Image (cartoon, rainbow, N blue to C red; front, side):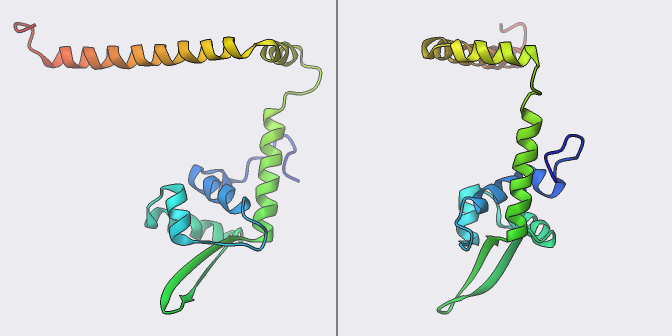
Length: 155
């Protein structure tokens, strides 16, 4: 079973694009499907990139791609299979197990306690400080790049 320590994460699902596809498909009711263009728009993916990743998921048996017509208009639908949903659930369980600290770990306990005692104002202040630092770094990088482009005699 996935989730046991030492077992690698499912490489078919683990890539970012395929993880996003499986997350989207798993959010649908079990017997539901989504059109290819709708999935493409939701994921902001190119048709070629989405097709390539869907093919890998289809080869693994995680999704089914059906082509047909709605009236006279061609339509492609995508759905997660039962084994795909099971693989995704196993993947999530394994990921949770990797992210959950072992019980009895004092460092994890003190971090959790510190996090739970932080009030909203402190969190907002920390977020603002992080954003300001990022903006300052970005501005500094832009300034130095602009300055480097100007000949020294003109500066």
